[in-house]
Amino acid sequence: MTNIFSRRVLVTGGAGFLGSHLCAQLLATGHEVLCVDNFYTGRRANIAPLLAQPGFEVLRHDICFPLYVEVDEIYNLACPASPVHYQSDPVQTTKTSVHGSINMLGLAKRVKAKILQASTSEVYGDPLEHPQKETYWGHVNPVGPRSCYDEGKGVDAPLR
Ligand SMILES: NC(=O)c1ccc[n+]([C@@H]2O[C@H](COP(=O)([O-])OP(=O)(O)OC[C@H]3O[C@@H](n4cnc5c(N)ncnc54)[C@H](O)[C@@H]3O)[C@@H](O)[C@H]2O)c1
Image (cartoon, rainbow, N blue to C red):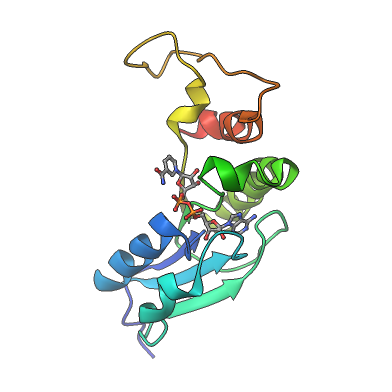
């Protein structure tokens, strides 16, 4: 049978603020979407309107653990983004950015998928340069309350 969908796309953090809108947009443009989320900050309500759409699938999974699926593209958005959430479990935040991203890169390599890694301006910490150039190393406090997020995303920074 012919697949009517153009590409199969994995969106991690797909039940979150940005991810749910991305899932909706990808479906609207004719893609098949696999939304993967551990619902740490994501909400079912964010993806409820998508559940009835053909081509939409949800998997409850923590990306800190390996995932074996067949996809053409990956958007790795999974990570709590607001300070109150990412600071409430700094070890899990670090794992998500480090182990999670390594797992998604491994998956991308295995299935030869294109991958987009969500970064943040927080990789520059409290910057001394404005605006920050891509060559700027930043001014992150490595022992501060934001370090789990800043340093974790910093590990992902070479993927930008
Ligand atoms: N919103 C912003 O202004 C902003 C700015 C810069 C970067 N970002 C980045 O964009 C991405 C999405 O941000 P958002 O605002 O949608 O945040 P969000 O908290 O709304 O969404 C993150 C999603 O990831 C899920 N998640 C967290 N850890 C997970 C794990 N280990 N395994 C699977 N799912 C997990 C959460 O349940 C949630 O659904 C994040 O990577 C964030 O760092 C966001």
